[in-house]
Length: 181
Ligand SMILES: C[S@@+](CC[C@H](N)C(=O)[O-])C[C@H]1O[C@@H](n2cnc3c(N)ncnc32)[C@H](O)[C@@H]1O
Image 1 (cartoon, rainbow, N blue to C red):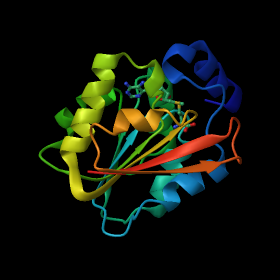
Image 2 (image 1 turned 90 degrees about the horizontal axis):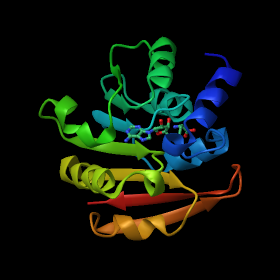
Image 3 (image 1 turned 135 degrees about the vertical axis):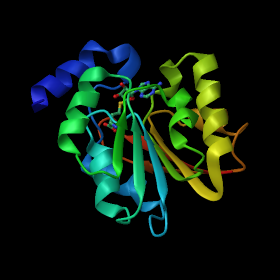
């Protein structure tokens, strides 16, 4: 998929993508700066999209780590599979709420999410929060990028500690929510 096909997929499915553009490199760098990749064996990305965050994760993760990327758009999934062919990168064309089906008994060190939670139906959203907090290791991190500060209040029922950061170096400017269980 070239850049214009990626944007077409983003706009055509705005109700599930929830974005007018992909994350900037600067936002991805800032988001990933809150994650400790050293020793992280199981990493999960929620909402792979064009692969901008996926690439950042792969560049930073240990050689023996496994990355599971959840994405519901078949076109984005096909493109992600073409882009990232490593054996330890699994592109999963399924909703994030089904993450446990693919974990094969593993717990998660890091969850990196760009899901548009404000557009996801409440039941699905609650299931994603519940499973994320349930399968995250005690010292693991759930890191979310979003455009509304209010989203942090949804996380409060599932995560013990929540911090936020903000960057203007994205269009639109974005928040980063960093959670621990
Ligand atoms: C805002 S886009 C982010 C894309 C890219 N990661 C970025 O940061 O630019 C959100 C992505 O989440 C995907 N998505 C939405 N709901 C999902 C769900 N329940 N499970 C997995 N992916 C989902 C959308 O298809 C879309 O690609």
